[in-house]
Image 1 (spheres, rainbow, N blue to C red):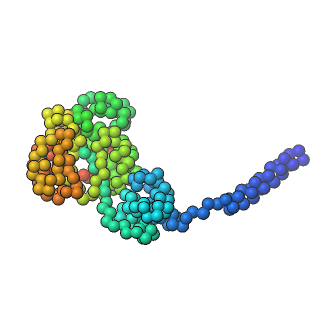
Image 2 (image 1 turned 45 degrees about the vertical axis):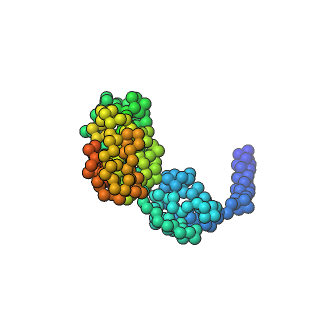
Image 3 (image 1 turned 30 degrees about the horizontal axis):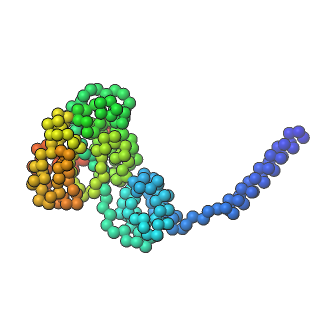
Length: 275
């Protein structure tokens, strides 16, 4: 009896507690807005933060409670298809939503950018940057240890020949790679922007060339031949406005540095991963 009574009391208390909790869960239950549930069901659930919100739940809540103020085109992972479904639920017009992709502003391959030293420490770009700015002679270029690869949840980036390469077909433009890159040389651009400058070096021409054989020297030749004024030279570096660029290719033909050219990025290949 000394054992049975305590056991019986524990069982009774447990049963009473479960009944009370069950009752409380029904009484104090928070009913989710049906619009939120419908919107959330259409979102991919990647929770990448590319929309600018904490996750898909947060974005769905913002749309449901925003009274039409929160755009339904912010989900880069879902793209135009998801935007159209969200717009239908919200009674909005999704408009035109062009797919965007990540672009690496560097062509400093192992052939183009020499090494300062052999790096054999933590396999991280952020860690390597603390040591003389990285192991390559160009202080602005891709360090090539794959912080962006680790950050990408969609397997869209590989390190090929010492430089990060984005597979456009896989990229969802979530921006995780851009945030992870300590060199800040990854930007999100419209998929149609095929002509871009593969350089991020803001040093003067001679100094830039010491670090990389194909660094932009800011000579302005590309800007002078552009028929639409889409190119400007700022801080010794050419920059292309994708809104003005008509992809005629004149700048790429004129560029002696081979930094301005139509996109030639390859899709990811497991055998090419270098991190």
